[in-house]
Each structure stands twice: as structure tokens, then as C-alpha cells.
Length: 203
Ligand SMILES: [Cu+2]
Image 1 (cartoon, rainbow, N blue to C red):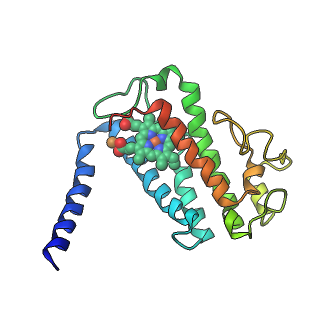
Image 2: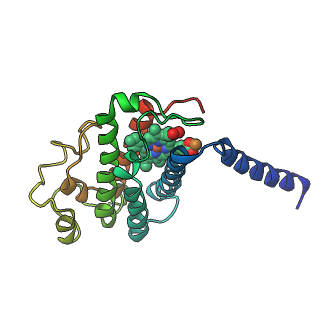
Image 3: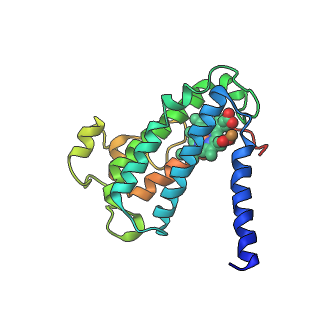
């Protein structure tokens, strides 16, 4: 190795340990939720690469990673935010507890979108041209049955689909008929919506 390569390897190692160190003071529920959010961050980064086509598309991997998000969403998020848990170095904002309903619905929305991503994984990417544009052509009748939301195909644009606000729950059957990257975009918007309002920007 040339000295330059050695130097950058060391720099990379230092950066990695600095990132870990930044939150090493966290304990208890704050540490638990930072670890859980960190896991969400890793999974989302991987899925972003796949949705962009940097990694070749693999429906099974999309399903597995979406399941990871599902397991860290909904009640798994809200239970890690007991009232007024703002111990350092938490970036949580007090508004979480004054606007708890909105916080909770964003956590549930993330869970619903993760389930929707699992259901839409087989549809592939919008850009691949193989995904159905919309409608009832999901791959396999098991999808709707699994999600327990049969006759709810009210159309993507109406209730809770692509065009709906962040504070509503999406309709499962709509998500199941969308291209996976469309669902994934809605999912990452939900991460961002929650962070914008409920996480401080101090880091
Ligand atoms: Cu942290």
C-alpha cells in the first residue's frame, strides 16, 4: 500500500469509530431507540441502492429488508418513546408528547408502507417497464389476502395512496399494485416527515 492509501484507510476507520462514539453516552431507552433507528438507516440505505439500480433488483431481498423495517416500525417505535424521555444525547423533541397522535400515526404509516413494500416487491421497478402502472394486476392473489384488505382497491389517487398526506394510513391494496420503488419513495418520505417535526437538527 502507498502511504496515501494507508492514510485514507485510517481516516475511514476513525470516521467509523467517531460515528459510534457520538452516541456512546446514550443509555437505556434512548440507546435502544438510537440503535433501532440506526438499523432502519442501514436497511434503508441498502434499499435505496437497489431502487436506484446501483445493485441489481432482487425481489426476495426487497421483501427481507422491508420485513426488517416492518419489525422496527409501528409500536416498536412508539414503545421506545416513553413520556418526556429526553435524556442526553437524545435528538428527540418534546413536541413528540404534545403531538403524540401525529407521532404515532407516522410510526404506523411506516409499518403500513413496509408491509406494502413486501407486497409490491414482486412488481419490480417503475423504470424497468415490467411493473404494472396501476390497477389490480398484483402478482398473486395471496398478496391481498395476506394483508387482509380485499375490496379496498379504491384507487391510488383517492385515499391514502401516492397523493395523500403523510398523516393518513395508505390503503394496502393500492400499495400492492404499485411498483416497489413508488412504495419505497412513500416510505422514505415518512422517515423524513417524522424527522422534520420530531427530531432536532443539532447533529
Ligand atoms: Cu444517537
